[in-house]
Image (cartoon, rainbow, N blue to C red; front, side):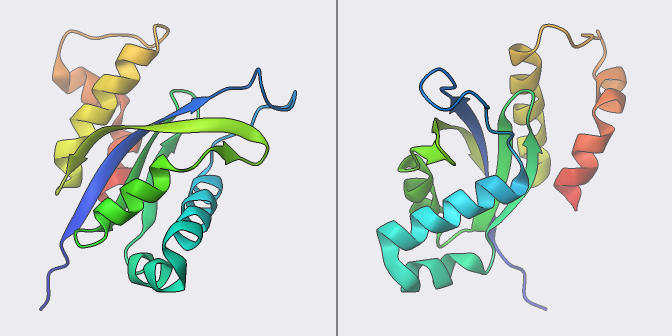
Length: 146
C-alpha cells in the first residue's frame, strides 16, 4: 500500500470590498479551487496544472473568518503556494492570500486554524478548557479529517 505525502496549508483571505463591486464575494470551496486552478494554469501551464491536480483540494473554508485549508502533494506545494500568492481577484473583487501555516498532518494544522479563527472573531464564546472548545468546533475537525 502506498502512502501519499501531502502538505496542508492554512491560508487567510483578505477581501478588499471597497475597491470592487458593491456585492462582496462569498468564499466557497468552489470559488477558491477555481481561482487556484486558473492561477496554476496561467503561471505554470498545462503541465504544471496536471501535476498539481492529483491532490489539490480545498478541505475547509470559513466564510466568516476567511480562513481556508488547502491540501496539496508534497512535491507540488511550493508551486501551488506560488500560484496562490499571484491570485489578485475572485470574480471582480480584489483579494490577497496570506499563508499562516504549513504542515504535513491535518490534525496539527487544526489548532493553528482554530486559534486564528478565535483571534479574528470576538463574538465567539471563549471557553477556559480545550475540551469544551473542541466540542464547539467538532464540525470543523470532521471536515479536516475527511
